Structures are given as structure tokens and as C-alpha cells.
Image 1 (cartoon, rainbow, N blue to C red):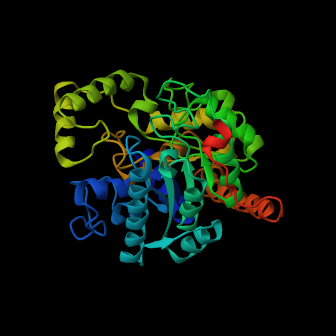
Image 2: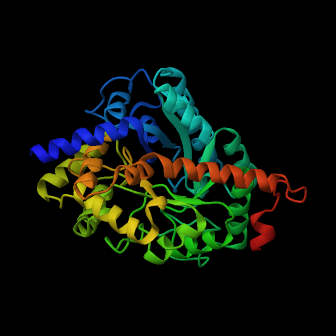
Length: 400
């Protein structure tokens, strides 16, 4: 116990200097589902552990220095509905930043992230989770970037017309020609290509096409837990050549093999009760908890996540890994990582495995900041080319 306590104290000290950049948090969607975006009804400036996995006091306790807020909309939202809902998500992130200026700082660049850290505020960035959000429009992609979105996950749980998802039946065999153009345009504007949720073939295609580093905002190692949402070793091995970062997630069904079948049953129960499996409203959570009580679930913990990080470090290298918890995007979390206050427990676990302070600083802060900066540098180089203006290509032109 004393040894564990010493590691926790050391973890907190390290996070004070090198706070966590978390790649993915679904608080904006939780605010939509639970409060209709009414920030008076759900004040995250106060402890909201009865309803949420995220609030500002627990972000502070967890040593979070930068957060990519997911401006997610479900992939059954289609067309203009998906675009409008994404805009509402972007809007609520802006309202959060304006409401809590002492704690949150809007960040658009790597320099902004460093400035927030120096001010003792949490750098707040945005990532769009799912290419369906742009409705096959590169102009919409550019508009999202102008509004502050700094990554886009190419798919969510379903295919887009131009990219295959990890959890849908393959259609295009990876990226289509238009999908490749999406990647090129993201490189041009400086938006990170996020390869979480996409099929392994889409990962490989994107890494072949991109000239900027990519990210996996919330994915773990397939060799440790054989789930299609995770990253195969051959893809992890490509990251040093690309310069990108794979951010390990905490979602039990992606990190603990025994949790995969259990979650399938829980999802089927949710549908049978009239809920979407991703629903995190209070009524939906009651259904989840009742199922869990009747069917005790396999429990992941900090060691489970650390096993993934050990493997990812071995295959991709210490310069290419990070953290993407997926809080408020999952009903279940690992023991010790129950909410955003739990990051010090993970760092303490890694310290117990003899990870050095220098390696942990890369994991928590430096790798993610470097990757965004490199994407910015790539974009400046592309934009200096007079032959590379904004793409006006369409899905119909490129894919027929």
C-alpha cells in the first residue's frame, strides 16, 4: 500500500508539469441527451458524478491539461440533419468555454495548448466523430475547420459512402477515391485525420495517402484485445514513419476480451428495451445497471489499460502513443478509471511498471502537442503551393 501511495504522489507531481491531453470526451453529446444543451440544468462547474463522468472539478483532480471535446452525432443521423446536429455540438463547446473562462481556454493550435498550460487552464479543442457529419461536402469540412474542429474521425460505427468502418460490412475496401480526397483536403487545411472507428483497410489507405501525421483519438491494441475497433500491429508499426499518435481508450469492450461478449448481450438488452446502445440518458443507464446487476460484467482496471500501453509502446514507440478515455461516451469504465479524475491512477500503474518520467511526459502531453503542430506545419506547406487551392471535388465526380 505504501508503495502504491508513493507512485500516486509521484503521478500527481508529474501531471502538474505534464498534464493529460485526452483525445476524446463525449460530454457535448451527454449535454444534448440529458439537458437539451441547457447548461443551467447541468452545471459542469460543479460535481456532477451522479449524472456524468466529466465535470471541471474532476478534470482538475485528474490532471487534465487539454481536452479534445467530441462534437459527435450518431451515425444514424444522415445528410443535413447530421450537419446541423454537429453545429449544435460545436456551439455547446463554445458556450462551455465562455461559461467557465477561468478553467477552459479555446485552443486551435499547438501554441494555444501550451499557452493554456502556462495559464493553468484546460485547453479545449474539438474533434468531429464521424465523416457522416460533413454530408460528403468538402466545403462543410472546411467550414467545420474554420469553426475550430481540429480532427475528424473518418467514420463512426457505420460506413460512410467513401470510407469503411471497423464495425460495418466492408463496401469500398477502405477509402474510395473521394475518401482519399477528404484526407488530402484535411491535410491542406490542417485538420488531423482520426483513424479510430475505421476498418483496418481504411487505416492503411489513409496512412498511404496522408502527408501529415494521423491520430487514433480513442483506440487500443488489437493484439491485446481482438476487437475490430482496435489497431492491428502492422498499422501501429507504421506510426513512426507517419509521425502520428495512437491514444489508448478505456472502454471495457475494447480492452478486455471477456467484456466483448458481455457487451453484445447488454446492447441487445438495450435494443429490446427500446434504447439505442449508446444512449446515456438516466433512463437508459438504469436499464444498463439493471442488466449489469443480473449479469455481472467482467471488470477491466488500470492494469488492463496499462497492458495495452505497454504493447503499443513496444510496437509503435514511446513517441507515438497517448490517451483517449472516451468518458461520457460509454456506460461502463474500468475500476480505478471510473471518471476523468482517474488518470493519476493510470500514471501510478505505469510508474510501478518502471515507465520513466520522460516517457510519461510524452504519453500525457508532448506527443499530442507535437502531432498537432506537425499537422499545422504540413498545412502551411501545402497552402504555399499555388496549385493546391481548396478542393471542389464531389463524391459523384470521383466515385461515380
